[in-house]
Each structure stands twice: as structure tokens, then as C-alpha cells.
Length: 127
Image (cartoon, rainbow, N blue to C red; front, top):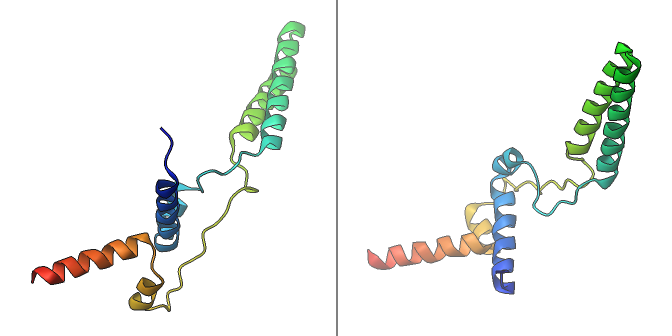
């Protein structure tokens, strides 16, 4: 079941706040959701792998060891090229400004900041 527009906006806002507030986590997870794959690298990798398979079969058929080894190396390199994520589509999140006070950052407020403010007001009302 797809998300409603409001749910999508909330999810995007939570992601922006996560990228802004927890850059180490974002770096550890490694990437931005929705990044497009590098089709050029995938095609190149598949072509290298197919050429490697051809060379490997030729090496076995001709009983030439070096051709088989080169074919295997081509296959391995092709698979690595195809599955390694490209750097072209990567978007790095903007670093948070450490000079802003917590009060100023709350006033510019995102979704989580508003939730935290509401929680604080409720807790103060109970005292």
C-alpha cells in the first residue's frame, strides 16, 4: 500500500533531519535513498564479465592456461565494476552548523524538533 502525500512529506522531513543532525550515522549507512544506479558501470561490468567467460572457455578449449587465467580475471573485474556503487549519484548531506544555539535550531524547527517541543510542554504541564 503506497504512502499518502502527508506520510511521504513526514518521511522526507524526518530523513532531512536525520541527515542534518546525525551525519555519522548517515555516513555509516552509506547513501541516500533513491540514488540512481550507474548504468554505464553496470553495462561495462557485464560486458567485461561476458568477455571473461568467453576467454575462459577459449582457454579451456585450447588448453592454454594463461588465456583461462586472463578470462577469469576479466570475469572477476567485470563483476566488481558492475556491483560497485558509483560516486556520480552520491549526494552528501549538508553539515549541521555547530555555531547555532539549540534554541535557534529549534525555532527553525523540523518535524522532530516540533515533537520534542510538544513533549517538553506536556512534561512541564505535569509538574
